[in-house]
Length: 223
Image (cartoon, rainbow, N blue to C red; front, side, top):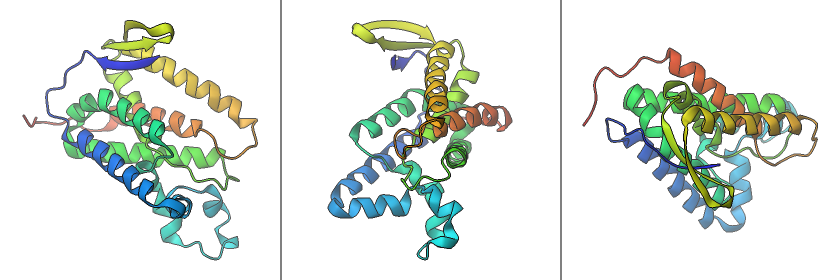
């Protein structure tokens, strides 16, 4: 099912959500301009588990190009569909979480979810030499936080055969998580590198659920 929009208006303009979307779009446009250098760029700024777990055997690896990607990877995407999917989910659900946490709190929350999801991902892919890129883990944290904060918020979704229904958020996002967990569990037995970083999605979602309970709420609103 594909969410179209939610019926849960926020009380503030989602400035940080918009800025994050713009950064991702501009970064993707920069990727498109790289041509043959794109592969090197993604290996440099995406997360490559082998760099972390076998850094002693790779001469060109250093602290900067090993650990800075934990931040940079979440602003890179492997294609237009990848970008649009992540940004669409962030646009629908991010404004309400930004409303809860305030602008600064939302920035910190988003980055921690992204970094934490990367840690979960590399734990299940220690031997992978393929860069992990994408905002999916950080966005998954937003989805987890939304499901816990607004479980009964109505979400308009598009189902196969072009049926449109309105469902509560806990069903829409709970189904999303089930798909990630099912595929992530199946992927454990798959030794191939690459593909979808299911465990980044799972990790980000769970981290978002935990953090939304721990983070302080915003004490004022910007209108």
